[in-house]
Picture 1 (cartoon, helix red, strand yellow):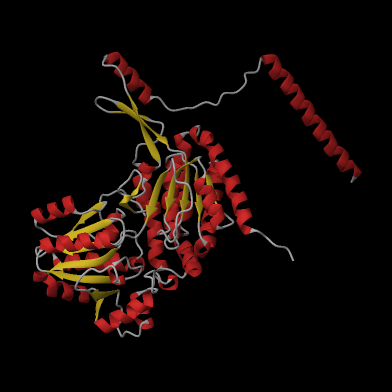
Picture 2: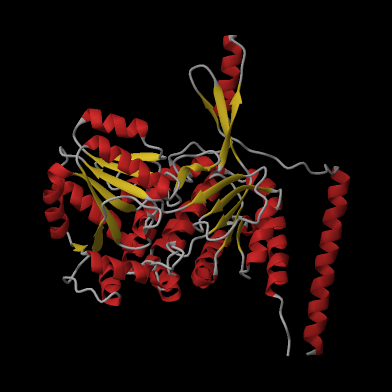
Length: 501
């Protein structure tokens, strides 16, 4: 019987892939931007048609989410996100402002630890950032989504070969093992590390000297003030929380409503497909979803509201989209006061917007890392206070936290990797194209002649050259003769073999 040490194989593969990724930095630097843009277009053409197949593949392997809606998300990445990325300032191009100039350059090698849900759209979005910024990237996925991610990367590499894009710049750990991941994340040649694993274990890797982004769903509250458009508010909340069964980055986790419009909001939410649980039903649902230590049961993540209700022996109307649990106060012991990995919301009623403001802060600080908050209001004073006072990375006004945070229903940068304001090294908006590049300022004297020099430099095409040894004409002549002799010898050998046959 042969024994295979997958941990050692994973480390060996990680070392090889990382070496190739580091070596590809110079190759990418020399690529013309036209080739990069052509590769992005081919990625869209080649992968878009397979969006539904990829989503079904991920669902069959992971048993998470809604394959139809995940397919829509993949299509969104390959259209809207790609268009957004292509509008950004390209790397290695000097951009001139009124008084100064700057150039954007790749940060270097990127390592991404993919999540167990929405792994394929997350992979593709980060892939687009990497290609556009000329950054090598190494992906790793855990067992639950490993094969589906591997299949997608195989298609990506096939397109890269046809476009003459360096394959070594786009890597995927074939031997999935924590030891290999820990090794590759700890290497000093890695410049950017994206961890989308919801911090399920202590991070054993060395993050020193890297830009590190810890992505998470976040414990994102929604406040509904008395001047809000209640019907539009309910529509946004249900759409955001039910999409992909509540697993969008930045998805809503709780509703805080002003007492004056409580009954009106409950009626609107019920019309949109929400079901309010009584205390006994809430206890059964909590026991179903969470372990005694508060962690979610992995097999019950990203399930539909009807499926969860059936498992908890709760009778709900057909086409129920979201389950809502009423709570009087925020508690560290209450699992419903924290992030919930499915279409489940907690519901709090406050007398006025000031006490609601405090409730939202309690929820944010109780769990999660300040990812997002939504406020539905037409009162400018209240909107201003929520924007200024809440410890979150993004405040969404009259829009869903889920669909607003990723840039679908807002003009925020489009991303599927959301971080809290205290969990990212350089960004409070999540991981976007801007986090794959660094800005280098260019100073110039006040003489207009110097300004003209920079402007002319900025209008020149970047055409890097690789230093090679110059050969004389006589050397070239000898090389031509040698090549000719080799060709003749090869052809003679071919003829001899044909005669022998």
